[in-house]
Every structure is written in structure tokens, then in C-alpha cells.
Amino acid sequence: MTLLTTVSLLILSNVFMTFAWYGHLRFMTLPLWLAVIASWGIAFFEYCFQVPANRIGYHTLSAYQLKTIQEVITLTVFIVFAEVYLGEGLKPKHMAGFILLALAAWTIFQKDYGLEW
Image 1: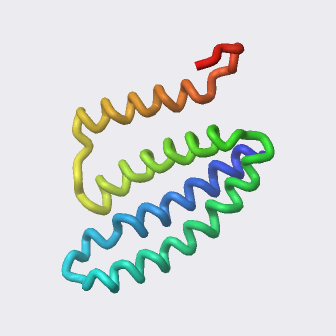
Image 2: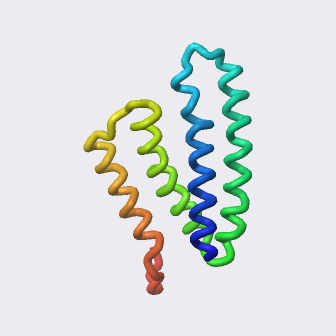
């Protein structure tokens, strides 16, 4: 249950984070100061989900694993956001980069067999 709760909270957190970081790009005529304030307001809700997610998840996952899960979720949420909200298509080079990042995430979750890197 802890992992499901952690992942669910991280998904919610990343939806807010993505809108805070990139949502203003559809409103380029908005004054920069207003975009910053709006982004800060949205980011508050991101933290309301992110902090509990990490505290709950840290009972069973390492900080490295939590960060890796967060990054994979961030990319997944961003792909949907860029396509649906910004209208930017996913290109093969983007997909290749994301596959390499997924391989990196897979590596983080492998059992440690005493190998020192």
C-alpha cells in the first residue's frame, strides 16, 4: 500500500509541478512577474503532495529510488502535457532519450550484488 500511495501522490505532485513550470508558456503575453506568481501558487499544491509522498515512501524506498520514481513520473506526465496542452509532438529523438532514462531507472532498482562502482 505504501508504494501505491507514494506513486499516486507523486503523480498528483508532478501534474501540479508541470503546470507550475510550463503552463504559463501558453500565455506568453502575460507579464513575467504575473507568470512567476501564478507558478508559485500552483507549486504550493505540488509540495502538498510531494512532501507526504517522499515521507511515506522513505519507509520502504531509498532516497535514490524515490528520486528515480519521481523522474520517471515527471517524464510521463510531461509527455502527455506537451502533447495535449502545448501541442508539441513526441519525436523519435525524444523517445530514444526517454528509453535511455528508463534504462537508467531500471539500473537503480537492481539488487546490489556487492559490486562497487
